[in-house]
Image (cartoon, rainbow, N blue to C red; front, side, top):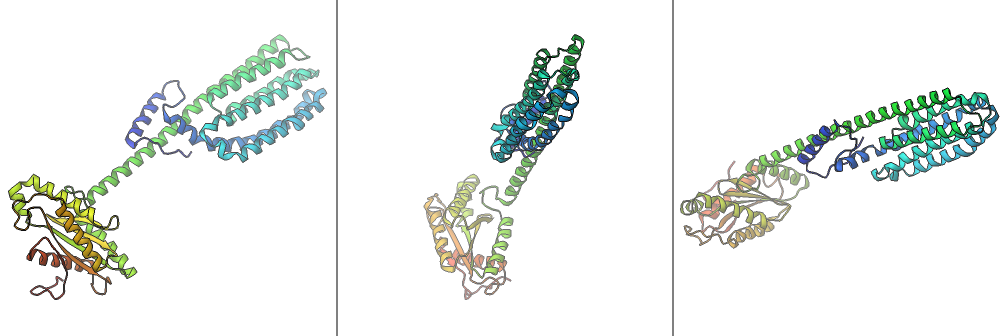
Length: 425
């Protein structure tokens, strides 16, 4: 049973399924809301397969009753051969072949009633064949042949598990066909036999309908339990995904945190090393941020970091570049495939983007608005000109230090010949 995904959010979905399970304790069969349509879609393919499998088997059993025709309605045997093999069998074969070729149509929930209608019509047609024999036979044994309706009832209600309402309609039709063949036959049934046979068939219809009702209720409950398990699994997956995102994100700014940055950089580095492609890293620091906090207050400082993070994310090369908060007022960006020249262009765009936010910074000796200093480091051949990803981050940090040691609010590229410093090991 393959259920289609529910359109409702998972939490609402579970509530709806729980309500349906509680409702399932009363006499009603249909599921509430969209669950009914999804149940029908879930069983459509199984119903189609069952129609074909039992349909061919039923056709064989139907024609095997030629032996009973010979024994109990000998005077109608050749007419029975004509009806069974010349009329009903071609009709049944044609319907089954059509149903097999129309799988895509009949396995849609909207067309599920067509499958039930095929069972209904084929069952009534089989009963009509039996009625034809009973109405015209003068063989004394034929009066007992009414019990043959039992086989058709079992097929239409239990072997082919049509919907309960269809089963009720089928059962009423079978009783009507029996009464018609009993009252219109050339050989009238004795009164006691009429009552006994009708009681027998009525009991068979009632008991088979009771079984149909209970089976259908159980199938729908099984479907709901399966959907609930699936919904809870989906909800758990959503929660895990959310937790994973939260564990990778900086709570204040919403960009990635330092741990996620390290994991991402290592992946980018390994891929770049395999492809012999460049990798660049930008290290950014908000200029005079301590003075900003002291002058404007910590809430304003938090808002400032959020605005800076947004400005950085807006000005890198979305979506291939990766932005993270490195710690405090420091941010870092990983630029896969970026050459030294491209990295400098991105860094300058980021620096200008922060200035364009025009966030007042009254305590800054550099500018009247919030600015950032940016350090840039590039490895043109990862693993060759730079031994590992950590060393590349160290170079970007060293370039940032040079930018801050100068006039700030500027972009500084890493230089091996920077005096007075030593590349971190």
